[in-house]
Length: 164
Image (tube, rainbow, N blue to C red):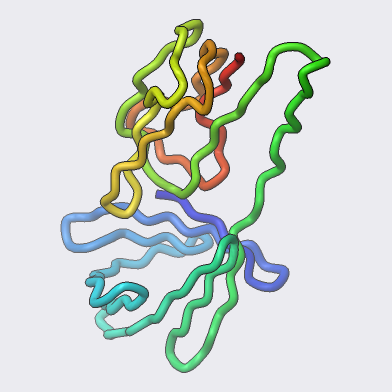
């Protein structure tokens, strides 16, 4: 899974992949081998290059705070610009459905041109071992599917275009 954060003026790119022994972590192009275990909600213990670390993590909206080795890091998740919606006078209602958190697309249940009902599940994501169903906010027609099964998505990434 790919993540991107802001720390002051610096953009941090983080890629995390499951490996045979823990995780392969790439942080701004530098590779690390990590073994991690969640202890409690918001607490993470991990071995990095043979050294044990403990981090405490809290989030609020787009903000993340990480307490690690006596220091607190305030990270923000870059916000993507949202496509403005057109009003009723401009024609049919268009909705861009986006990922609410980073994850992996497990199922794409619709195709372009398909008619859907309000509340119908369009895509299923997996994030942090949870299944997230992306449902149609209203009845309409699928105008575009922007992802494929197995693809990793970021928070705010476009998944489906729906027209009323």
